[in-house]
Amino acid sequence: MTDKTQLGIDFGSSQTVAIVDLDARRTRPLFFDGSPFLPSAVLADTENRLIVGADALRDGRARPGNLEPNPKRRIDDGELLLGERIVRVDQAIGAVLARVLAEYERTIGVAPDDVTITYPANWGATRRRTLTDAAAAIGLTDVRLLPEPVAAAMYFADRLEQKLPDGSAIVVYDFGAGTFDVSVVQRTGASFDVLALEGRDNIGGLEIDELVLKMLAANCPPDGWRRLADPSSLVERRAALAVRDEARIAKERLSRNASVTVTVPLLNRDVVLTREELEQRARILIDRTVRITEGVIRSANLPTERIVGVFLVGGASRMPLIATQLHRSMGRPPITIEQPEFVVAEGSVLPDRTPNGSHSTPETSGAVEHPLDPDKTGLVRDDAGILAGTKGRWMSFFRRDRNSRTASDQPGASRPDQAATVKSVLSTGWNGVAWGADIAEFKARFPQAERQDSGWWWTGEGAESFCGVPTAITQYGFNDEDRLYMVAFIPDPKDRDKLPVAVLNELGAPNGNDSSWTIGTVEVSVKIGGVVATLVSNRFAE
Image 1 (cartoon, rainbow, N blue to C red):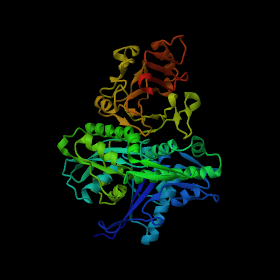
Image 2: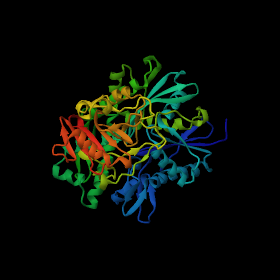
Image 3: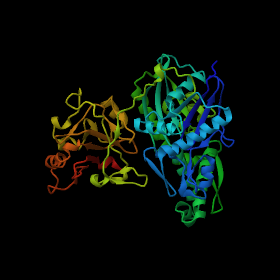
Image 4: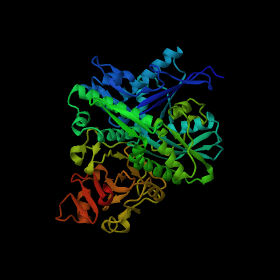
């Protein structure tokens, strides 16, 4: 038994869970206003203070423009506009962490000896740095960061006392409010290693909430619902926030009941919703997560008998359809527990069994944001402040660390235009990967492939060239069905003037100087400033 106290924090998109460990076996959750779930919401009040949790949600009904309900989803934005105040994302996250720390010290009476904060395993160095900056700003300068699936696997092996022999693995299916992540975590001696992972920042319980809202809208007068969907007065904005709360609660109730009745705020209309209809609407989304899970299991390249099961984590994983579809796919039911929301936080306070406190995850640590000027690239910023290109897809360009090897010294580096002309190969795909190939096929072609914070993929095999011009980085984009639809080529600044000329000469624009044209079903685009060139398969772009 030890006298050291530990605090584990699972900072989530919609809510944050904190677990206190006083003697390595006796754990309990912290309570905030009587609940073990602290809403991750942040609000800037009239006195320039940051209010968090349930108070932020309550005050947000009066001042919705001052509220950010899901700061974790804004991790890449840098800054938030809360009312008339600009707040850095790390400040917003820090405010949530400060509330957790204050409640710990109020309850326990002293500061914790050790603090662990969990994070999605596919977060790169930039996102993790935002998390550590937020912690450091409130005095937590020596926190341990732990990948969420590793924490879940530790919980599975320790708290559930399930057999996870050396060399075996557990599939962690984490369906949270704002994100979906699936990982294969293998036990190797005393450590846990993430063998394969995939995640989506646009799949989670919030998307299910949107489906519930659509069900409500279908049962309300169009003019009345428009007041909730596009509120123009304070009363309507309050009602719009309230109806989202009702949708979330209805979603949770439909996990336990076949039907529920929802009273729509402002319209005073009772609407009956059924689980059957929600599952019909959600099936495409859930089936997509199942396909991702299948692909991750294939990527792990483990014999079937070495995988002990699929472990459901995250509050949104309670949806019965998830267990049903996974059972059909895997041939055996997934492992479920009564309170999946606590798994990651509980696992984070277990003794660190990995050497030097490190955990193996297939992630990139050397990427930095590429300082592209939207005015020069032709890209525009969307409402969230993220660079967006044609067809409304978001993109954020990254460059490789300057110490990375170039194509000339990277074994097996891909240089497709040295073997054949660009025009002869682009109709079918690029770099040996067909248009429409899924992520599993891409990773089979490039075993070292890496997914970046931005959602783009790198081959992991060094630099490529496009039309004879070396690129600093080539990025592969996948559509909403995880099919390859786009490749972007970003040259070094010194080669930017060469790129437009080379592409126009090699691919022959219709009138000799267009910056965007179509060859077969592939749209070719090159920015005249030479910042980026792209190939887009129109067949798979929508």
